[in-house]
Length: 315
Ligand SMILES: Cc1cc2nc3c(=O)[nH]c(=O)nc-3n(C[C@H](O)[C@H](O)[C@H](O)COP(=O)(O)OP(=O)(O)OC[C@H]3O[C@@H](n4cnc5c(N)ncnc54)[C@H](O)[C@@H]3O)c2cc1C
Image 1 (cartoon, rainbow, N blue to C red):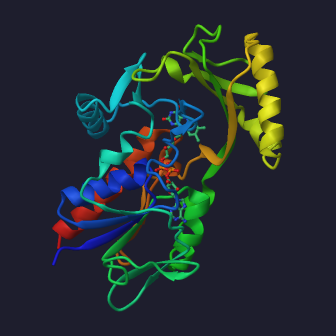
Image 2: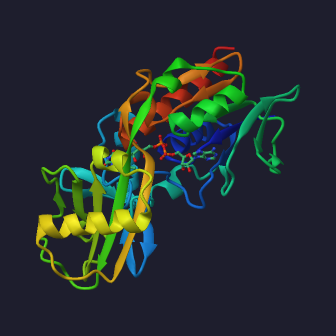
């Protein structure tokens, strides 16, 4: 019978691991606490607009990621935005096709991982998740941000200094929808400002509706940290006021919302590509192993799966 692996987290790292394990003939079940896939490669459809409120674009430099991105471009799910790449019609689009053979279980917040005589079990605070193979998983891949990975690793009886060392900057993201084009001419702006780090006209990305403007504003790490516990209403008003001051835009948006990313961009990475305990058959991966990029998340998850396959091949 083929091995059955559980992957916790359906962001780029988890899906990259699931993809490579599936390609090597393993059964894979991916668990995620959200309804959608892609993690911080996120797209929100609201008010008639589409916002990439997490990752804005990504680079593709390492050979295996370049090969994947070329494949996705051929399928129309990724396109160039200047020198960089974006998902089409939104940043979350590639996630849906990354691991087509894997079983995906969403809306499940995993709280503990335990190993019994038949294999690994995945549980929430309400108990064992009712899904095929649970209780007999051959191994586990933890692919969630480091602060969320640490308690899962502890529940599994593993500790790794790298996960405890890794830190993230938070980010408040403001989404503004304008039914008509704004006066902004640039697709992206990086103001030299203590409040706002980034302004993107998402409607300037390929494959988007460009009849109006969907604008995403990211606060700086310092501002986001200082106001981490502010109410969404306060953060939205403060960021919108600063956006107006910086851009001179006077039109009122027909849609406005904020999202707080508590773990947005890796500040201090673990400094190793992945964590892997071959005797426990448990690994961990994510951007936090390498650095604050979609590509780093891919490299981490893909390399961990390569190590898992290599271990079995060596037996
Ligand atoms: C505001 C912002 C801007 C960014 N800009 C860029 C950019 O321009 N370019 C770039 O390359 N990168 C950017 N990034 C970083 C990039 O998004 C990440 O590096 C990458 O997407 C991380 O992928 P990951 O798989 O490691 O983690 P994630 O995408 O965070 O995936 C982890 C998944 O685990 C799930 N999860 C967490 N805990 C549990 C649990 N207990 N049980 C089940 N599921 C769980 C989450 O729901 C999530 O889906 C940005 C990120 C943010 C937030």
